Image (tube, rainbow, N blue to C red; front, side):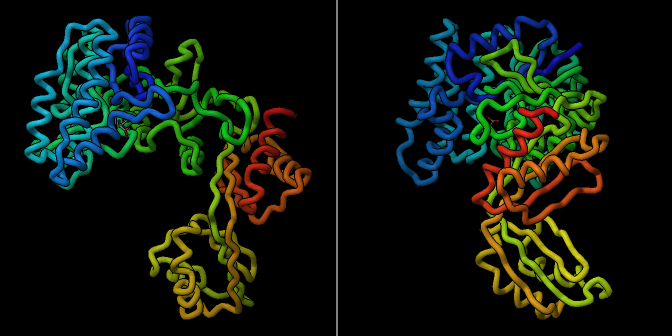
Length: 439
Ligand code: ASP
């Protein structure tokens, strides 16, 4: 059995955190491949090393002196090395980095050094082999991740390597340049490595004990989700719940490898399992609640709309012409409503309205802004009667006016539109009825 373990920045922010990570890895012989992030924040006011690197490289690009900020970054690593009593010097590495900065090696190169150096320390600390991600993770000439080439090379390399540290977040392009994934991309590296070694499980260690049923900024101490499917995760992530980089699910999902989100600061907690499919029903019927504020509804009326072939296409063309994507589109017999992101729509609203008039000739168009959308997600809803009833009676009891309801035909989620002002209360009411009351 092989486990791949990825540790996030806060898990590796200091020597103390490294020591916790070391214990976790040593506690299980199956934890053979380690993917570290760059050191994160040690406290809320601290700066992540990745951000320090971006700031430092901005000086390089502005032709300003970058030596002091680069030495501050070196200090962060030296503090970790000294705290762990390692016989390791990064002098040569920093000399090389400084040289490459002078030669304008690129912003991705700069950002990637956070993971690269942390990987060297981690490998030294654990006595594992260091495998530079530039040699095993590849992007094509257009900058897209090259899954096939990566999988081939990485599989071959790690088959010969019993235990290794592979830094997260970056790889290389065919011309040998360093390229990073988007922010938080070490999660993706962990997933790619898991696929290449045919891991039994991809453990993603962070600073929370898994996915929470609802946002802790709205609900005090929300329950943790024990098991969530990839599809549920996608619905919740889309609505703003984030622990894992969105693209991290693809490589492992293809290979049927589960992800286990764990807490470095509470390793005894089981965390959340993210799986393709499960027969475990969630304890609360629903799996999670997430939502976002800042939507506009565009309400379009036209008599006999339902009989007019192509009406929907004409309306959507008006949005497409203005490069606006829509979120939801509930409709009635003679009405149709399009939900769009307020910030994206605001500057273009009159252009969209006139385009709808020109293309679809409606009787009237009305806009309503400052709306929030809430997704109640749960694979358990399919087999449980009355879920929608419970949601709406809870909202009615909390005096919340529901402006829109949309249930996907998969019965995996129910989307509810309320005004921004009711957003938090609505989430509390739904959480209470499913989790606290547990009827
Ligand atoms: N260090 C990178 C970031 O801060 C990547 C990661 O941590 O996953 O975004």
